Image (cartoon, rainbow, N blue to C red; front, side, top):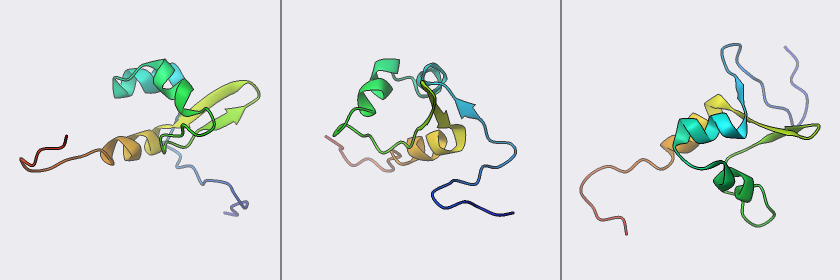
Length: 77
């Protein structure tokens, strides 16, 4: 398999999700993700654009969600 520069290899069982699907999966609003795509507002979640449509890779959404994991009883204020 040849991987092109600046391209992500996608597993066969992965899927592209729309902003609405990502919002439903995460429990956040669609506007959260729309605002995060504005310059200077990036939330760390990679996104892809094909024509006028925006997509997120499901595996990257799940990895992004896990980055907010906390353990223990320490206060996170």
